[in-house]
Image 1 (tube, helix red, strand yellow):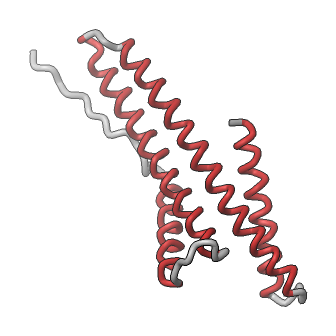
Image 2 (cartoon, one colour):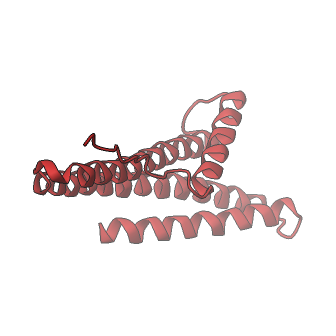
Length: 158
């Protein structure tokens, strides 16, 4: 996983660097169209690769979360630990939802990058929809409390 994390960081750095060159061309700071075209391709392919790496890392983290949660739940088998079991399950469910949402976000970003580099034959309207969807998902991921555990302690009848 260490190598995938490093690859993601390098690919995203290439994406941002290439994107800056494309911006410089559109702002008129760079006049060479071939350089800008190459920078756009490198940028989009790097964005695709970085998004795929992110999805792989999140899937790995999700699998580790499931095994850790199952281990914790097995340890809390006694009946007097029911509230702890519910709390553990609620926290794990919230974390799993966030990880799954991030995987979906990375998949949409990867598809969008392939569409922008014209590796996938997507119509402009579809690319626009994917871009807006990725942006809305990104905003949702940045909202505080988006993935809070839904846990309520039930009072036992005495």
